[in-house]
Image (cartoon, rainbow, N blue to C red; front, side, top):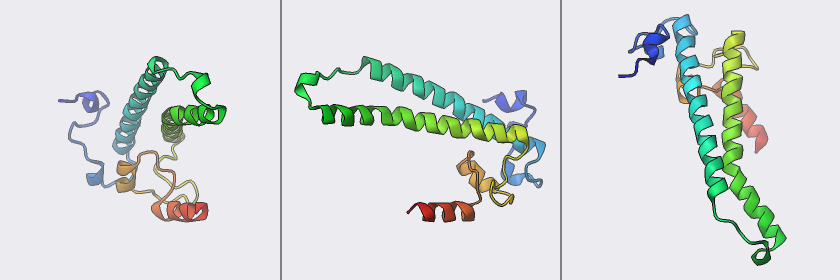
Length: 138
């Protein structure tokens, strides 16, 4: 049984979907715990990627063109870059918790919604605003 909820003052069977008060103290504590766990996992993953990269096979430059070396280097660093990006997103979400703005859209100020935060605890925007932002990127 996971006792982390108990140590944070949360009931072990706390369900944010059942909480009638959006961003109540319990809900904030729940997401803070979830984000801290995610950050811990990302740091461990980052360390594993770095170890695997250091232990990985070395490619001899004389067998591979310079452009291929650059391409291979980019491919090797993508997992680490993705982990770093996600780590920054989690850290930003934890910062928003400390500011008291977590769970509210950075653009409209509207509640992001518990279901969305359960799916993606680092969410900065409501689903509608995120869709608009994604459409602009296409």
